[in-house]
Length: 111
Image (cartoon, rainbow, N blue to C red; front, side, top):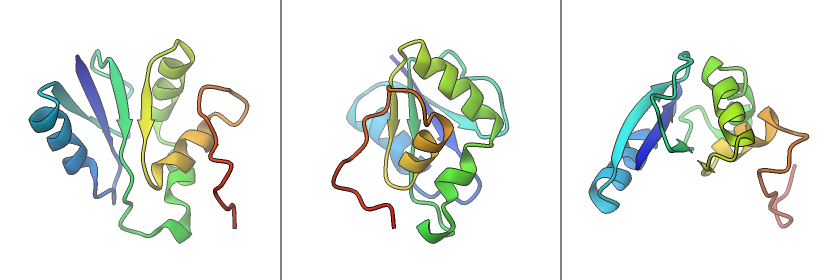
């Protein structure tokens, strides 16, 4: 199985996600730069959180404008698994507000 780890400028958990996939799961992983349109034949997409600018800037919501997100959304709509953690959850929600492939956390605050 091949995992694609999306990397944004200022994200700081992409290396951790890569290491977890390779060392703990024993699977192949590739970095996917946010400006690219190539998911490099990934079977699973990981949107790591931890934007160094802080969540108050809504970096995840801004990330939805990155070119790779068009491909991530299309991948997800075809049934491909997408894992978002921490602040990247808002990137997934912002990119696909009208789709049902991402479960919302009913306990989360939007303030």
